[in-house]
Length: 300
Ligand SMILES: [Zn+2]
Image 1 (tube, rainbow, N blue to C red):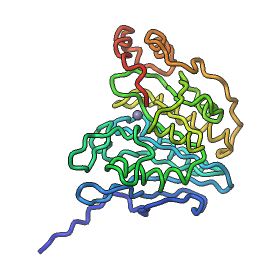
Image 2: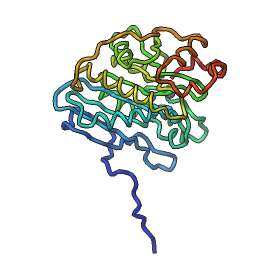
Image 3: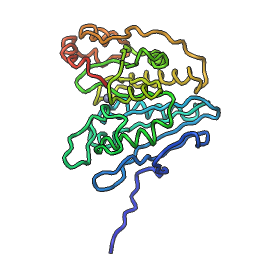
Image 4: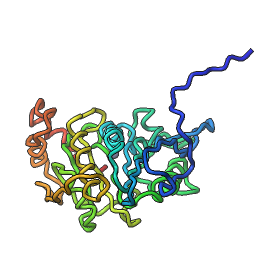
């Protein structure tokens, strides 16, 4: 006689294959988005949170976890979901906190493919995916076409730097796009870098699709930094207030202290050390900071 398990730890939210936030009522909605299947044919499902205001307004898309080991970005997305609940007055905020589920489950930056002979893939080089591509490309194709693209007028992609690099709060924005630079400044980061874009990067694909976008590097990979998470959450709330989604006095858009260019290692260490919120780094010597900044120009 068979024994049937009753164990169920996964919340029983509706599973969807596509999303159109225009059809949803005001309030908070949670879904599982079926993005793909694994090699056993079992569905890979991403959590999706939609918070919709009573009034019409802009549609924001917030993504995190494109790289599976970037904890601060993922935690920022979850904290935003908690903070925005019952606080979005107009428009729609859609949050996808765990884009790369196979990577997250294996504590890996890269996507673990179900293709028989495939190597792990950096998903942030293959957007918007291909309908007839390999497993990573098909994964991104469905994510982009069925979930992300139809539901966004502005986009924010949350990351951290690659492990081994020491970073404060960085934002990448294409300075040719005023709405993107404006979003970057409203975050009030330590540094804003001018980013003309690279093929296959989510931020670049958003921008070239007419959706102004920024990439936020919330500190370092593989560790959690509550102060940087808090600053990023506050910054995103400022963006949403600026665009009328949240109530409150409209924040002034001011230039960041360091804008437009990559920093030399010694400048970088100075910014890191002078960042008032960056207490973790003060435990280290400046020499070690300089050594670790060899990955200074690593993007996303
Ligand atoms: Zn990343």
